[in-house]
Length: 93
Image (cartoon, rainbow, N blue to C red):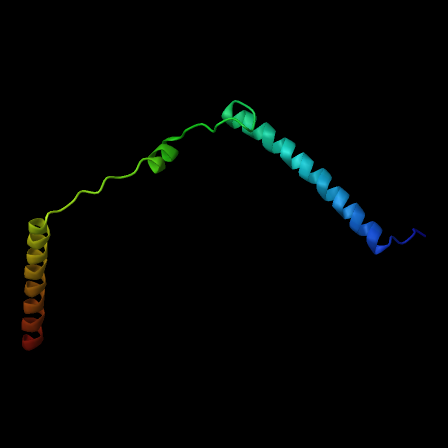
């Protein structure tokens, strides 16, 4: 019959197994980075088009007060037309 392991022995073995697996994962990561980046894991990653787009900030255009007022007036005109249409359709219905 196999001997029972104490809780301390079991914990020690679990830690040992985890550290070995962690070392294996780090080696696999280094190998994958070498394949993907063409160099060791410390090398800079290749720039992709998506990464380049993220890095560039979009410039926001600035509207003048007159421009904002013109847009607001046009929107109010649209809303008034919609309200007028709704009220006329409610009266007819």
